[in-house]
Structure formats: structure tokens, C-alpha cells
Length: 251
Image 1: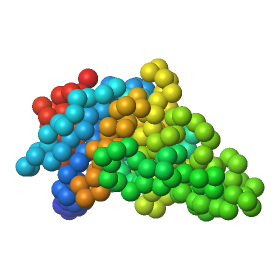
Image 2: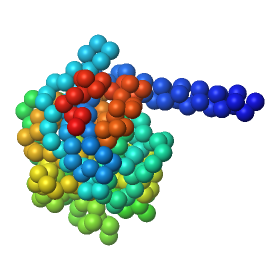
Image 3: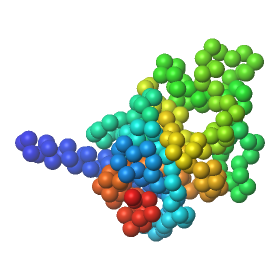
Image 4: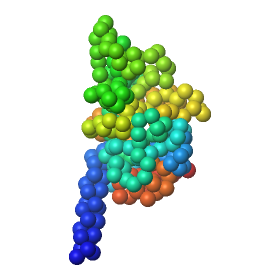
């Protein structure tokens, strides 16, 4: 009886993982980031498009930076239930797993030429909440800048900071947000080639602009971020590019 129960539990787990992995069946664009280890603060990133039942790289790999302390499992479409360290607010780790790509937030009034993706121009009234006690934790909020609430100064998005000129939302801990599980995760411009982030994935501005130009809503872009060993263990079950297809990002 115990063996039967164990077999049923395993079957349910496999079916659940398969259904969640099926999320990528409709994705036509995939961004893949790979770190050497869980504690690596940098790695490689490459863009792929669907090619039959597999994936085809559409650009060379580029160098990126992750959290100062490396990676931890995030709350996305895949990876949420994995054993091990999980992303927490202000832990200086980037969330690992598979995530949808959300809206682009920019200081500019338009996206780079050739772009076709939903975006929002950040104004003096825009905020992204990282206060775990706030009811809109890990959400974009717009207020009247003429009457800002007391919390706004610490949460506002417009700082005149070059690194935040382009913010591409990585939908970690978004559906719905869990207080304390990590917030404000984006692709954005790096502050320097040796300066990791607080948990975002950062890169040179020219690489980020090319990524923005490539994104298309109708192609349902996703982001997969994993340490190398986890990638090699999970790529097939999760429907990610094979090690041969992803050879450019596997260190």
C-alpha cells in the first residue's frame, strides 16, 4: 500500500511538472540565462526562437550580471516548488526558474526603433513597491505627484538613473505576489562590467536595446535562468533548448 501511494504521488508530481512545462509550448521567443553555480554573480544570456519542436539561437550569447550573492529559486512558472534556497526580499540573489516577460518601463517616450512591445513611460508619479507591508507589494503603482503619500519617496521609479532607462519586467513573484518573496525584478542596464545587481539581470545597454527590439507580444516571450547543473538536469523536462542548441551559454 505504501508503495502504491508513493507511486501515485510520483505520478501526480510528474503530471504537474509536465503541465507546467507545457506553458512553453505556446512560447515562440525564449531568453536563456545560465550561471556557472548558484553563487555566481555573472554568466551568459542568449535569445532563441521556436524552430519546429526545438529552439534556434537568433543572436550570439552576451555577458550578463545577476545578483551579488548569485541565484535562488524564484516564483515563476517553473522552479517554484524546487528544494533549496528560495528568493527573499533583499537577499541580493536573482530568481532562478522560468518566467513570463511583462511590460517595459522607460524614461523615454518611445521604445527604440523597430520595437513592438507594450511599454509605459515612467513619470514622476510612478512607483514599484518593495515594502513587504504594503498592500501593493511587488506591483507598479501610479499616484498624484502633487500629493505623494509618505511611502512614495522610497518607492518611486524615476530617479534620473541611467541604469533604469530601460526596465524589462521579469514576472517573478507576480501571480499573485507573496510578501517577502522578492520584488522589482527586471532586465536593465548594468552599472559596470564587474558590478552585479541586487537581483536583476543586467547587461550592456546595446545588448538590452537589441533585446527590446526583438521582443514581440504575439510570440509570448519567456525567460529561463538557471545554474549550469540545474539547466543540464532540467532542460528536457522543461522544454528548454538542448545542451547542443544552448552551447553558447553553457559555461
